[in-house]
Image 1 (cartoon, rainbow, N blue to C red):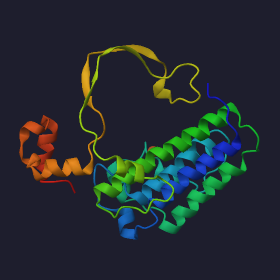
Image 2: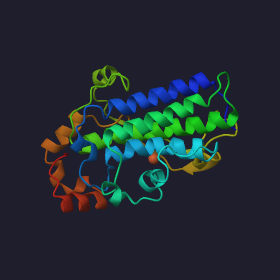
Image 3: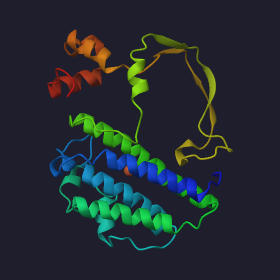
Image 4: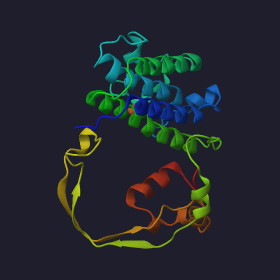
Length: 251
Ligand SMILES: [Fe+2]
């Protein structure tokens, strides 16, 4: 079960997710908003509309019987299950302006149908489901920008990076002793995804893991030291990719 939350909380979090989305595409020109056809990224103009389609499909259409703002085109263009990744660049997508207006039309409908006070348990679940889905896509918008070597976005909403910058490298390894632990969500979790059902005991062997993610500066040292040329630093799949891509350094 999902713990009921207030409608104000849902609206505030929808707005936060949307603000993050918009600040990650705002500075991009029309060409950048489509980008090259790559297996690891989506065309951003497709992906931001897909976020709106997801809310519209699961909440407004499936649960509450609304028609799509886009009519039949909605599923023909933005259903991520039905539309193969490779063809997303070839679709007659909405223009940038139309996309933004589709996103706000869906957003406004979602807000309008909430009546204030506490949300039902069903709405508490499905609205947060949509919000977390958008949050996952904002992570994808970030990696897309990095893969395509777009400029670092001017982040006002999405983070205060000063703390992370100040922290710097944190080298070394943490030893995890192994043993049994509960993997998955418990019955009283305030929110959970389907694929977290249910907590069950899992036993793992002892292992070590880096204490913190590798920083750009640390990775630069690896590249400068010829790390891209030494097979012993790569696993088999990574090395195969490196050779096929002819990669000598990150993008
Ligand atoms: Fe998605």
